[in-house]
Image (cartoon, rainbow, N blue to C red; front, side, top):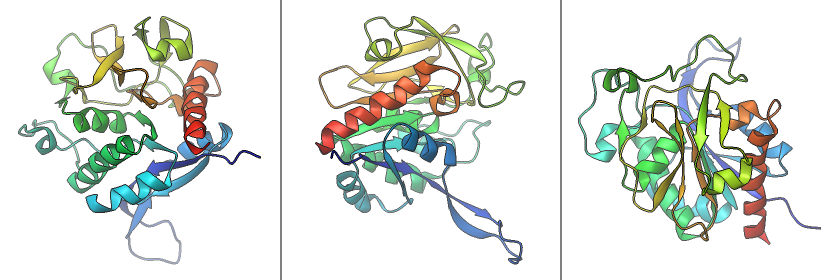
Length: 250
């Protein structure tokens, strides 16, 4: 019997108190449970990767068959050689440094990668790209990219997918409706990556490898794991990633 692929989920650290008998906040490893649920539903085994030192990244890259780079804080502008924007929010450069090295080691070991929201931004920076630090400030005619009138499981705007992209082959549609929870966006695209989708205002919504023959890599600005029950195309993104990770295990 074919073993299920092991999928690493990146995480952050938050100071929280979730125990009634505990009277103080403690540093806690945090990752949205929806990521783990989605991996299980698609046939993978999720494992949480705690934020660590860059030199620890290779161990996790070799251990996992695929990696999901999850959401969270803004990317520190220092990682792409810019000064911080006045509207930049909380950053975690230690997480940035660890995950950039994790991307590098995952690619060296030819592991499948799926990145979403913050993880998608991190992926672009890992390839030498930059970040638009605050969309609303820098693009006066942008649409609303941080939905507040709809739940996380509902779409709020559409994206246009490039017909010659791997993403198009997965979803089979030129236009799809997505959810949106970000104030930063992709600036200069990293070397070796290509645009797979854009919003109507031109904001880049998905990235993939220029060389489509290489091991699977896809980044989306939206959260397909939140939309998977309502839209089979969103689940197709997850299952394609899991199937690519399964090939690596085999």
